[in-house]
Amino acid sequence: MAGKDDNTKSLMEAIYKRHAVRAYKPDKIDSEVIRTLLRAAVRAPTAIHLEPWAFVVIQDRNLLKRLSDRAKAMASSAPERAPTAAQAHRDHPNPLADPSFNIFYDAGTLIVICAKSSGPFAVADCWLAAENFMLAAYGLGLGSCPIGFAVAMLNHPGVKSELGIPPEVTPIAPIIVGVPSGEGSPTSRKEPEILSWR
Image (cartoon, rainbow, N blue to C red):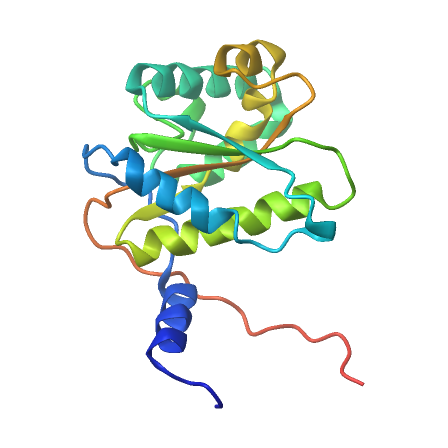
C-alpha cells in the first residue's frame, strides 16, 4: 500500500483496536488533555465548513451521578426506552431499578458534543467530531464510550439550563472518557455489506 508508514499503521491500529470502555479508574483527566482531545475533535470533516459543534465538559462527580439518576428516571417513565437501557447493562436484568447502575460507568469526565445549528449536516458533523475525539483518546491511552442513553435527558430544557446549554443548541453526542480500569478488547464486526459495486 502506498504511503504505509508508522503514522498510517498507528491510525489503523486506533481504528481497529478502539473499543467502548465501561470501567474506569478514579483518575481525573487534566484540563490540557481534554483540550487536546477537543482540538482533535474539531479537525473532523464539516459540511460547508460550518463547524456546527460546541462542547460541554462535566467532571463534577455529584453532577454526573444526578444526571445518571435523572436519565434512568426518564427512561422508567418511557417504556419504549427500557430495552436500550437493558442492552447497555448486561449484568442486571433491569438496570433502571438498580440504584448502583451509573449510565456513565463511573467515568470522571463526560463530554457532550452539541450542535449549534439545525442544518442538514450538523448532526453528522458532530458525530464525525465524536469519532475524532474517541480515536484521539485511544491514541493517548484513554478509554471512551458514547452514551446514547443520555441524549434524551441532556435535551430536557431543565437539564440544558443547568448545564449552560442555550435553548437553540442541541446535545448530540455524549461521550465518557477516562483511564480504563483493566484490559478490554474490541468486539468483532461483520464484513462490510456491499450493496452495489459498478
